[in-house]
Length: 271
Figure 1: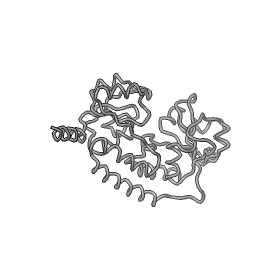
Figure 2 (figure 1 turned 180 degrees about the vertical axis):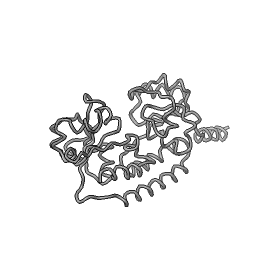
Figure 3 (figure 1 turned 135 degrees about the vertical axis):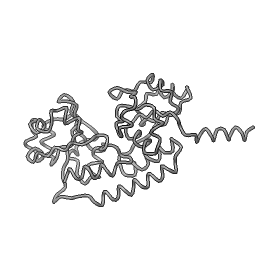
Figure 4 (figure 1 turned 90 degrees about the vertical axis):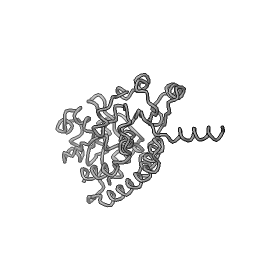
């Protein structure tokens, strides 16, 4: 009887999930890359790539997750970035027998490889995950060996914007700080960590060679010409050279299977 019980437990432990709710863009991309996109039944608003994923039902609005909405899709596995679910929701899902795996993302090359392996293990595909992680590592090394360089290190200021009323700049330790460095640039903000509200004074003081933004952020401010006319921009090297870099946010902060693509794309725009 004990042997049979252990066999059943082991079988359940390695069973591939059939109904996955993925609550993170990089998570959704990685699950899809592992060939399980057809098993994802719902995603969050940050899951927009590839188009197959973007077309799936969303269980969040403005980054706020709805437990009721998640449960309506009857998942057998919920994949979520560490800390994004309320403890009450975690307890609720687990009490209902729904497996929840919280995935920690570290913004580095080693962190990206670890991220891939974590997700592969969660969907019972560790061997495939190992192959994917090794291939991703090789692609990243190749991308870094091809980096273009200028006569001097370019300072890049990232502005997160959703209209003039919501603007923040990226400091040290953020995902943006990490991708700028990996792409051969230097984050223009070194005085603080993570994100802080944008100010004209900080812009002028940092004097970036380029201003980097997500594409939706550029649109929310009225386009590149409108950004160049913002107070203080004309006094920076970025403003003088009209260097506003507009990029896909889901690629820039992926830090998973598309990290090599992000490094190449950003490096090409910086230099």
